[in-house]
Image (cartoon, rainbow, N blue to C red):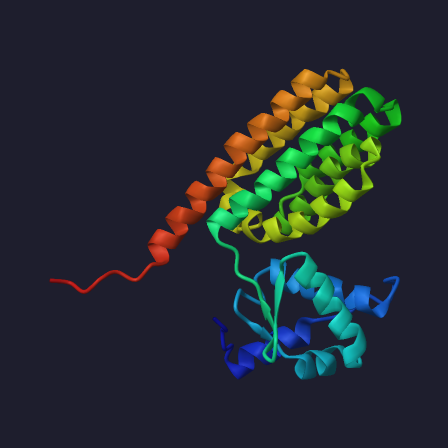
Length: 242
């Protein structure tokens, strides 16, 4: 179902879209801008992405825009509908659980290769990212550093196809994890679980790393689902009074 944004709100959102001139291609710059707007909730699920308005907002032709929308569709952030164009994809809690399952399963595979192969330089890099997480208080910025922290393990494993798959999935997950209320309540717990993973990697202790990852899978997903179910319940319209 499409969400019709009021004209003034839609124009306000479009006016915030900016492309990074340092990006490697124009399409990549557009992808980054749209992805950020979707993840931050500026373009909520169901919002139509009209190519004419987007092209005008970015000051570009529709060629790089179409390429960008296809990339976002591959990440699950956008749905391309025949004869209707593109809309921002919705994400149910069951779908969120499925995406988490993909990430945790693939990351577990990488640990078997990454943990024994980690160098002191890899550990130092993870420590630096962990320190950034400990200092960061903005949800999406924190999540980006968290992704980089976990991404280091996948890079060390050399499993590049896994890396590309997880990169795409994590952006979709970000829409839920970056919820300010959830972030405020769970940030300390997430940080502690990452600390345990870092310490296991520092010792090159594969079993401890797997245990730390399993705790993240069980506890983080449970907390996220509980929070969003409670939010949906509060927002659900109540029935007529007797």
